[in-house]
Image 1 (cartoon, protein in one colour):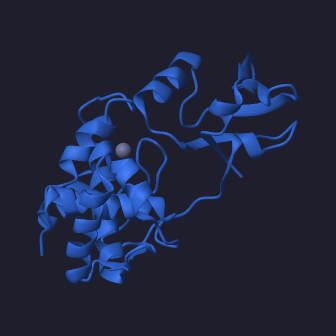
Image 2 (image 1 turned 45 degrees about the vertical axis):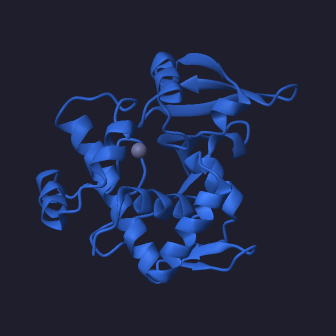
Length: 219
Ligand SMILES: [Zn+2]
């Protein structure tokens, strides 16, 4: 069964807002993420509920059914495979791929997705370090923690980012930080929670709290 572009974006938004399906989501937060009116959200939730994609009770919350979750994982799988394709095969930079993948993820051919996966050598992670769900929705989770949660003297490799927006990724490029970079915390500034770090064993950098909240290091 195929779903409209709009339906798929709702399913994806609910999946993300519910911390991967584990919590109930309220209508207003969906409206905010999709930049639409609460009334339109209500209409769409009724429609998705009649198709057994969401569990929806007016004035309470909404969550995905197991069908809904399966659809969400399929979209995420396509999104992340396309991002990988764009970076590895078409030489896009990691800050350039998200918006293009937002369009490509709606192509429904499962044969295309399977061939793409095979062509890429069945990658487990996308260019931002996010896990790529397999065809049956399995994801390889890695041990990671936010840089901002780590202690003085802790170190690790950058394995992912919590924010895939171009402005953030471009800033990391400017600092010379990418997946695989080695970071060691050499000072924690108590005044504003910024961190002084050593990058790849040499360069000393000061990272704001906002930046360190969006970098995952291997745990
Ligand atoms: Zn993306």
